[in-house]
Image 1 (cartoon, rainbow, N blue to C red):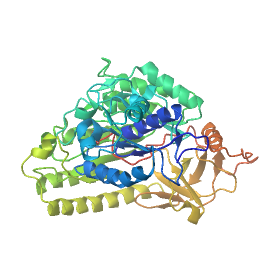
Image 2: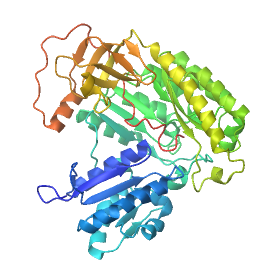
Image 3: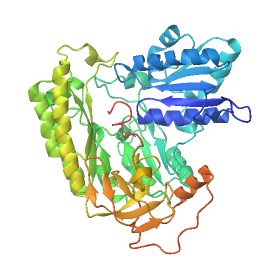
Image 4: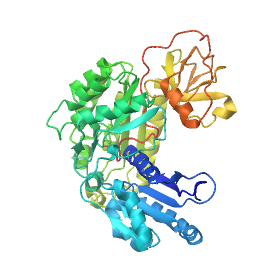
Length: 500
C-alpha cells in the first residue's frame, strides 16, 4: 500500500531485545530517508522488514512461519519486498533464502545501514541479495532514526559482548564489544534533549563493561556522571549490566547523580554456584548478593529486577533451592523468569543432563509464585508515597475504560492514575499519591496533586500534530518533586539481548 504521494510504505517487525528495538528505529530512519513512509493499519505494505532474534530454540520456526504467511501476499502484491535482518539472519545466512526463496534481502547485525541499497539492487537484479558482514561497519547510533517515543530514547554506548556464557549465542552474532567514544554518546544525548527527550536509557549487551575497549575501567561511572550534567535530561537509565563488572564507582555514580534513577536490572540467571560455573558466569552467589546489599545501602529506595533461567542442564533440586534462597534474600521488585530452552550453536545445547520438561515447569511455577508474593509485598510499601510520574503512551491497556492514564515512577514501577481535569500529554509529569498496590502495578485513585508540562510533552504534541492546549493557570496541591527520574525500556525484556 503506497502512500498518498506515491511513496512506498514499510513495516518493521521486531523480535527480541532492546538492542533490536534500537536497531529497528535506525532501520525505520534509513527507510524514511530513502523515501519510504510508515505503513498504516489497512492494506499490505510495500516492504516488510523482519529484525530477528536468535536466542530462543524456536526463533527460526517463528520467522519461517511468518514468511510463509507472506508468500501469497507477495504473489498478489506486485513489487512487494521482504527483508530479513538481525541475529537470526547473521546466523542462518543463505538458509533463509533456501527455505523462503521469495525473500528479497538478507542482512546481518553489522550492516543495517546497507538495507536501502540492497533493496534497490534486489529490485533491479530480480534476485535475492544476501550480505552478512563479520565486523561492525557503522555504529548503529550514527544512522538516521525514527524513534517510537517523543519523550524517551535509547542510546547505545557499545555493541557486542566479550563474555562466553554457555547459554548465549549473542557474542557470536554481534561480535566482540566495541565502545563509542564518550563525547559521541554525550553529543547524541544533548541532541535528543534538544528535540524534547527527557529520559534516556543507555544500552549495551553488557552496558557496565563500557570502557574495556577504551582502556578505562571507570568509563561507565564517568559517563553516568557526565550525562547527569546535561541540562533538561531528567531521567537516566541503563541496561543490562553484568555482576562481574558492577563496581563500587558505578554504585556511587548512581547514588550521587540526581537524574540517574534508583532502578537496577541485575541478571542473576541462577543462585547455584555450581550452575553459574556451568553457565560460565564469572560471579558466584556471595558476589551477587554483595552487590545487592551495597546498592541498597547506598540507595535504600532502589528497585532491583533480575533475569532467572530455570532448568539449565544439570540443575538439581538443591541447585534450584539455591536460586529460591537468593530470590528470598534479594527481594527483587520483579523478575523476568525463563524456562531454559536450547539456543542452537551454544555449548549448553550440547550438554548432557537436560532437565525433563515436567521438572522445569514445576520449578518454574514455584519460582513464579514466590516472586509474585515478593513483588506484591514490595509494591505495598509504595502505598502512601507521593511520586512524580512520567506520563507514558500505550502503557495502560484499560485506561480508556477506567478513565485513567498511566506512566512510570522514578524507579520504573508502572502507575495507573486518575485522569486529571486539565490536559496531560505523554511526556508530561504528574504528582500523585499511591493508594493501592498489585504485584505488577500501582494505583493512584485520588485526584492528581500537580501537573507539570514539559518539553517532552511539547515534542509529543508536535509529532502528533495536536493543537497545543493551554496550560492550566493554577496547579492543584503539591509542587512537583525535584527532577524526575528515568523511564526504563518500553519492553520489559530482561536485558540487552540474552539477559547478560
